[in-house]
Length: 85
Image (tube, rainbow, N blue to C red; front, side):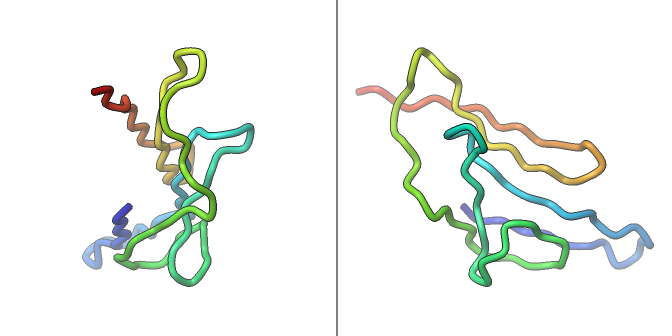
């Protein structure tokens, strides 16, 4: 996954620690950058990866989601479905 964290230089607000996770397993599956960090609070633009494979398909009709946690309780939640051919 490509991920970009950039602070607006014209503002005094700085981002809190961010993270990206996939809803696989009890604790989720976190993505990390090339430095091995899975909590981000500095500007960067790179690929983030997981250390375990993402399971294909569904179990008991569960929804697949990726959650971007942006600190202070703010989250972006992306839900998707596997294509079946």
